[in-house]
Length: 298
Image (cartoon, rainbow, N blue to C red; front, side, top):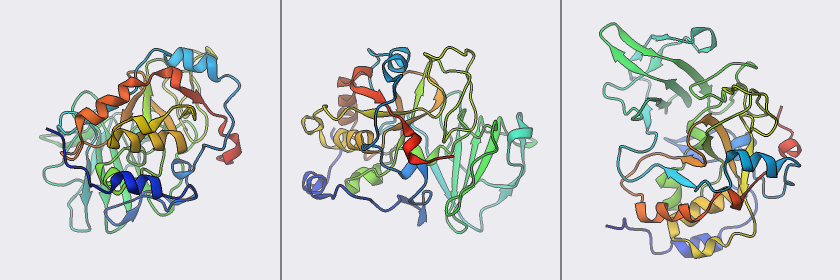
């Protein structure tokens, strides 16, 4: 069954201005400031000189795929906590590159299904973001592969070479497509995506890599793709159209190794899975790697 979409969504999409948009919010907090790399438009930037080679390695025939749905089995959920949420000390596998502070974890947190088991928490009172990779509750307490914390109002990048809860050393939550944004008619930030093979290198805003080769034809972590301007997104159903507009205006940032062109989002019963499936009409041939040096991101 198709989920209900606001009747005015198409009109909202057409009426939205092309200029700057306020930074997205979640639980009353900004999801990073206006000038953060995730929230910067890139539709004015040139394509990178090595775009063709990088897109071939990512997969020209790979289909764009929404790795989230109306069912809880797909997607990365975001938990909301507050000042009264119990804090837990977490034991880390990669402790040297993790933020070893107490993490606010709800009594029954929602955790991503599958091997990565990301546990994401926004503290609405402090506007801080806590993210864990491979999180598990054991009889001795919480354990995780790695963990990172960001101040959503004044974020600081990870030290160079440090991971986070993601391979690229970036926060995960700012790159997720959320149903609430689609309901409002606009995703005003870049999205997170994965590629199967990556270079042993990273470019801003990434701080870490998970590659096994120095082959320059492989994409480094942090590389940013953009939907080509020639793609007619008006032919797509409403929810897919909002996602595609974001990919044309803000692009998507390579954040982890995984299936090619899998785009991340939160699970929600509001998603229309038929709409999202329509994204598969597009492949790597419809994207280009952009030269982000003009953003001035360190």
